[in-house]
Length: 313
Image 1: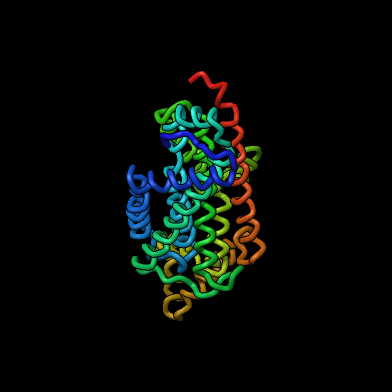
Image 2 (image 1 turned 120 degrees about the vertical axis):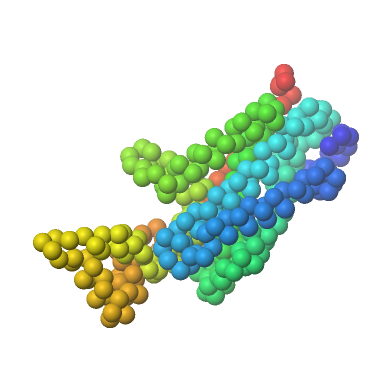
């Protein structure tokens, strides 16, 4: 953004700013965010795709990995976009540019970028051999519900990153802050580490929690088999008590009677979680939280730049 905004109307300024952002996408290598998203998605789906939608463990780890990909994409998209041109923003603001128009243009641009990344991620998952269920909880089509969920995860992370870019002094500080924001999302997602008390309450303010609940509900986590108990028992099948191997006897009996699938499904019933219940209400609740986070941090971005004329940087 080099020349000052000459039009006073907010809508006209949105069009001008958006046009500049699209030109920057083409001519300043911002397009590299798309192949990078494809590479990260490919690595993740290669690692966790085989058991996605098949077992509770595979679905949980796969959905968590996809959430991490979306959050990373969102953070990377906008972490430097404002702070790298702060002097230009100050000059154009003094020439009549409205900060709200500038941020709305960024919101539209980042929305398009996040949408493209979501389509790429869905395509990579399909190419990797992941077959999606056919039924969706909200729209009736799983692929649409799944795409909306991953878009909202990416976009809400993007808006957090945009707000940070509006607050920090320079790109170096922005890139320093981003890993801490990512770590916060992962730790307080409620998945990697058991949290209790005040720490548990912080999970409600993370995209990772709502994104994971959203995807697990869509993937029908609660109705899938759980293999952890069986795999754990298998390690003790040679254990003897008074010369008898009770674990081996039971497991051999299950295998001989072809009851393994029934045992795994029954194990899954004891590992169901209410927040993962496959209902439209659960999904819509997660969408509302992530949408609210995006709106909140977009407002923070506007508020942090409104006083840019007082900035001595």
